[in-house]
Image (cartoon, rainbow, N blue to C red; front, side, top):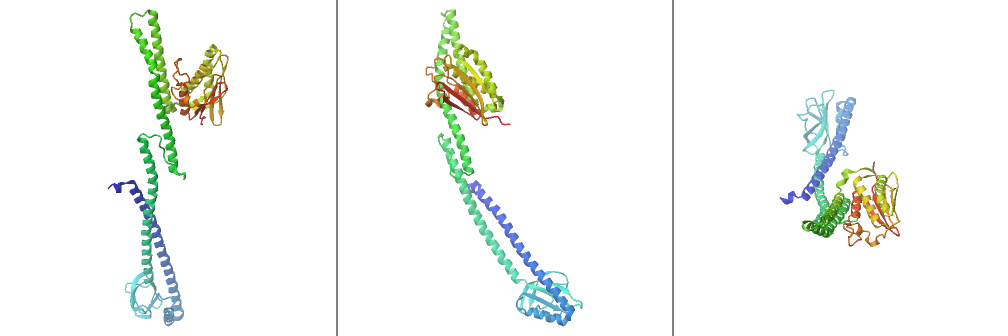
Length: 453
């Protein structure tokens, strides 16, 4: 029962059935067309002979007609020609048929009957037409249909053989095609099982043909690359989260314990409360950034996309940071206009703010931070350039991961989620983050997909 219900069996059966129907229609059309052509040709010849013999009767009379019939019977070029001339009472006068068929009325049209041929003394099937002459005599002209019936049988047998062969070939072809298809499906299924078992390094096999299965495999492999990156990111985030939150939670516990001690002075109690609140805010900031990263990586924010002028947004964020930059003796500027994209305005605002935070954190006094937004082909690029210590080249990819920072001590309480959030926002907008050396300093470029009308 499982064999009958299998998809492969059903596909082979469906392929064979469709092939059978198509071939049967074609062969049936061939059979009917051949019979119609033969019958039409026979009728045309018989009708022409009836007309010719009728003219002979009008010109030569009964005796001349009988002689004309005998000449035609003796003509070996037409061995299947049949004739019968009788008087008005049906008594034979000339021809090679034994007697007038009682079921045939002269002039009744085309008939298919069996009569005895006198020249071979055998009953044969004939196709004939008849007329009644001016003097009441009857004339029947036809053709022996034995050969045509034999042809029909041979043609029918040939068509049946062709049909049987076609069925066999369609079954073989269907089996080969389904075997090819299911072999590829089996390869994908086997790889999928290995992935489900936990081996995320497996990828769908790709051949050099570039067919639809290869296109599917490429799409699935891109998806698997993304899933593997997300899983790796999740593992790293989980490990980093447990490590990076341990210190603020421990400090928070210490501050809370201080608050529970009764011998603290009001000033010490106030300071312990401020420290505890600072630790709580830091923890909340970490969870907020992690939530935004997770939402961006999951593509949740795409439903909130709108037209955003990236250059205008960058100017607004830059203006907000100018007072802080001035306090740190750092100049900050922004250039660019009319760079419109489809994007999540709040996340883009947060990404630009994070880039400026990083730039200002490492920019030395009396240096400049430059923000630029421009159109590059169909995409938009926002870059932030500083003159700080920069980042080693081998750390470029690593620094974009969550909880990664060049400040090993984390004394400034930065969680290392700023650039990770920028990278997630870039992926949400089908873009990317690239880093380059500014000698000295760093250039961080946020490339985003352009606006589509």
